[in-house]
Image 1 (cartoon, helix red, strand yellow):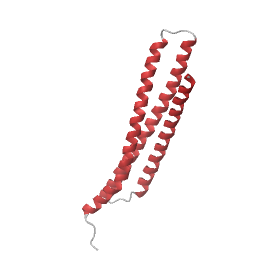
Image 2 (cartoon, helix red, strand yellow):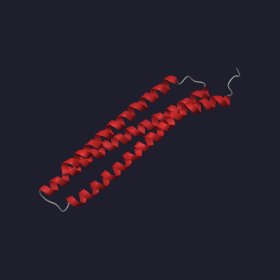
Image 3 (cartoon, helix red, strand yellow):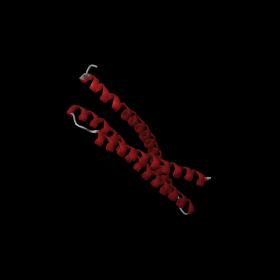
Image 4 (cartoon, one colour):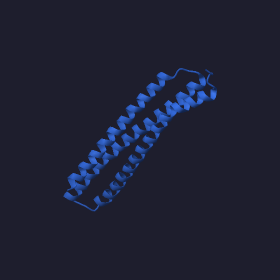
Length: 145
């Protein structure tokens, strides 16, 4: 059986990096959704702040309550974005570690496993915080009825 060539070794490392690259694509998609939600929250907040200036009494209190809810939602989306970015950075670290380990001949399976588990924890965190934000948004819609 012929020994593997250096090109075959590099091809193998590239093959191992494909799954993390797909994960980066998924994280990028989630970050896009979160950014869109953040933009809508900010736009709605601006409208309400302008509207609140001319209001008094109970109507102003209603607007203030909605602004407080939007503030909570904005905070959650920011946390989810932070977790998503953390995920992407750790996944990128997995890819870098695989190539650096190959080039320098280091055993990097433990660091890669740690980076990947960390990435998954950040990803789970981002999804859970995103779920909480969506639930708050749905609650706000139900309360307006």
